[in-house]
Length: 253
Ligand SMILES: [Zn+2]
Ligand SMILES: [Zn+2]
Ligand SMILES: [Zn+2]
Image (cartoon, rainbow, N blue to C red; front, side, top):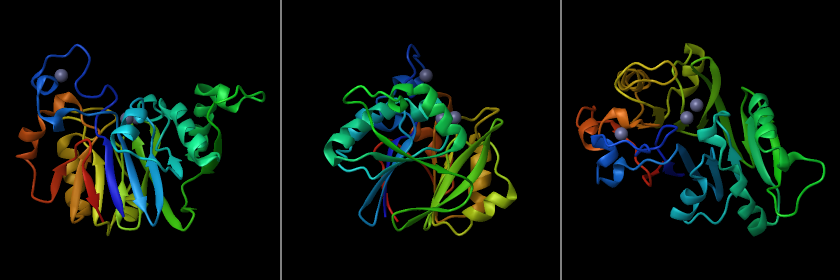
């Protein structure tokens, strides 16, 4: 199984438009963060989690030419805005794109991309095959995905476990019951927004506490704000088995 971080930035991305802070001015490529998304390659299957506003350039950068499913964690724009660009895969693969999302996310997609779901379709628009999911395991072909419901301010968001890999973005809290599903993961990805408190995302300290509790072989932090500090400075503060992810990082599991 191979994971590629397509984007590791919070909703505004890093650098932030008009900001001249140390992080936004950094020349380190690891401080350039597109909106959060990952690409998972497992047993010949190619799956992407979320299609934010940077979807197109992420696909081009990683030269992804096959996509078997798009899975949504939640309905926020930084995770859905780029869905129109799946039409390239419709043309390449000559079939509808399977899209996995929970009910409230499907409803939001139908509002935001009304033209995709309209009765009379304009030629060339994306074609999707909506697969509604809930908080129970499901399969994409032979691959089992277990949703993990986390809380993002008041919004329920899905993380996912696939074999020994768990991916969670946009979480503030996770119930003990849902944490049980994460335990035993070799690789954990979790959001860590910034140092200061935030109502809807884990801070650096909260993410470290969770990482220690789960104690995966390796934990990666994603969905970072420019307020976190530079990759280099924050990395120096972390225990050995915790790393800050960056755009383009690839891991084998
Ligand atoms: Zn987000
Ligand atoms: Zn900045
Ligand atoms: Zn969000």
